[in-house]
Length: 364
Image (spheres, rainbow, N blue to C red):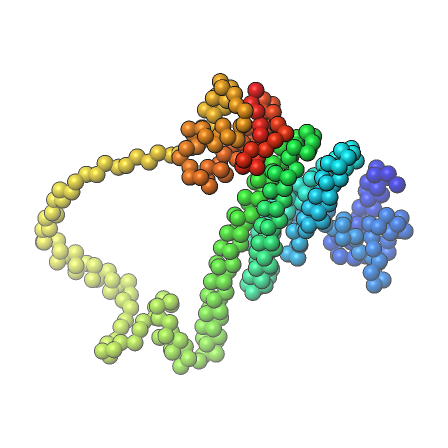
C-alpha cells in the first residue's frame, strides 16, 4: 500500500475512525482497516492503534496527563555508535544514520516542548478534577520534567562538542537547529518554576476549601457550640469574628446609621479646629538614572565586517559590548550571540575547536 492509498482509506472511513476516537472503541471494523494496523482488536472490541491516537492528540492538542515525554537514551547510544563507525570508514550510510538520529532527537525536543506547554495549560484550566488529583498530576509532570534536565545537558554537550567537525553536512544541520535546541533547553527552567507555583497555589486553595467545608458543615448541622469555638479560635481568618475579651467587654459592629452619625459629629467638632501643617524642608534628592545594559549586536557585526576574525567565539567574548558580564555569564551570553551570528553566510566553520570546546569559526 502506498501513502496516498492510506490517506484515501482513512478518508473513506473517516466517520468510523472519528467515532472510535470519541467513544474509545467500536464493535465492527472492515478487514482492511485491521490489516493496516489502524485498528487493534481487544476484548471483542476494536480500538484505534496507540500510534494513531498519539498523532491525533498531538495535532489536536489533547495531551493526556499520563504522557511520558520520551526517552532519549536509545537515540543517544545509536548516535555514538554511528559516529564511531563513520569515522572508521567515512561510509555514506553511517553519515545518513547520524543525520536521521539528530533529526529524530530534534523532533523529540520540539514535541516535548509543545506537550509540556499543553499539559500546563490544561492543568491551570482543568475544572473536571478535584484538587488532590490536580496536585498529584502536577507533581508527576514536575518529576518527569526534572528527569529531562540530565538528558538535555548530555545531548546538548554532544551536539556542541563531540559531533562538530565530523562532516560538513552534519555541522550545517546542527547549526540550523542549535538556536531552537537552546531555546527548548532554557524553557525547562521556566516550566519547573511554573509547575511549582501551580502546586503551591493549588495546595493553598485545598486548605482554604477544607476550612470552608468544615465551617459549612457546622452551620448545616446547627452545631452552635462547635461553631462558636471554631470562630473564636480562627477569628483572624474570618470576617465579622472577634476575639474573646479579657476584660469582659462586649464588642459590637456599628451599622451604617451609627457610622454616618459619628462622622457627622466628628465633622462638627473638627470644623472649628485649625491645623497648621508643618513645612518640611527636606533635601531634594536627584533621582539616579539607571542605565539599561543591552548588548548591541549590530555594533559587533559592524566590527566583524570591518576587521574580520579567526575565531568568532573568542572575538565575541573579548568584545567591549560583553565586558560588563562576569565569567560564567560572559560564556553563556557569548555562546548565545555566537549561535545567532553563525547563521550568516560569512561565518565559515573550521575543523578544529577552541579551548572552550566550541567550533572555531572564521569571519570572511
